Image 1 (cartoon, rainbow over the protein chains, first blue to last red):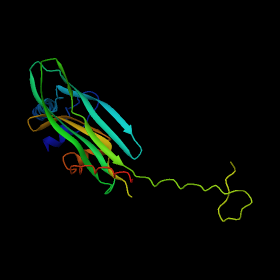
Image 2: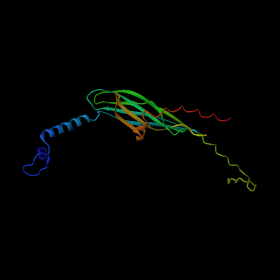
Image 3: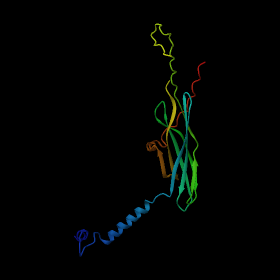
Image 4: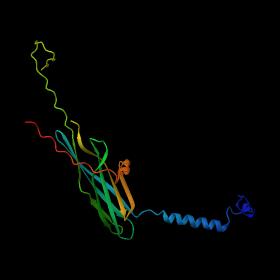
Length: 151
Length: 52
């Protein structure tokens, strides 16, 4: 009964607190613990991609390497690992496949930045197109089922 | 003949401390599902020799 009276919201003079003091204290401690556990990681990264493509008559050769910048905003040295995968699409099965992958260990000094360049991942796509049909030149006036060229 | 080989379509990078992932980037974002799961690409077949 007393609890119901204390949780009642009152306005004006003689207002009672919404929660008992001990409950409010416990709630604020719980909130503080939650905030401490949800701290942001001091390690950050950003990526630049380096793409190349070479086209020949029947093949397209692509290569991609990644430049990874790792930042450490903490006051302690961090021993980290960068894991990367370059994905491709298989021309036959149309599935996603791994063209290149690897792991690179990196040690970042306090308030420092490290730059990593991954090895090039290469993919070759062969698209043998059928040879273009030659147009036969027929002397104008000659009977033929093939239309004569204008030139 | 059907086309063979692969085309590069994206990438993914994870920053780890031990086994904990601190940061991850996928391009495009849908590649996250394939990270560590996609099979390795088959070696590209040599292009056919031109006919003499």
